[in-house]
Amino acid sequence: MRVFSTTFDPIVHLTPKKRVDIYATGGGYFREETQLTGPGIATGIFGNPYFGYYPGAYTANIVASSFRSTNRDSGLLMSTRVMPSSQEPD
Image (cartoon, rainbow, N blue to C red; front, side, top):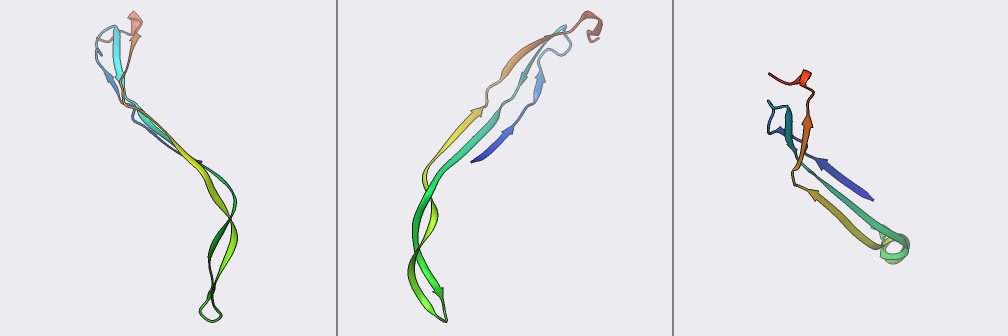
């Protein structure tokens, strides 16, 4: 299983000087790839230049199934924060 994720989380204050602060933040990207394998037989060519080459079979892991899950979050999250009156900005 392979997982890749990244986030972009800027915070933009829309009303920074008010008692009720409204702000927006960004999103991210998440991808998960999964491969299901099982034992199997593969064929190939074996040998070297001195003894020659010949076909043969060997055991290997064969990919039986694979799938990918992707989640993109590119929207904006809006939220509010109420500051106590003692911490109100000037």
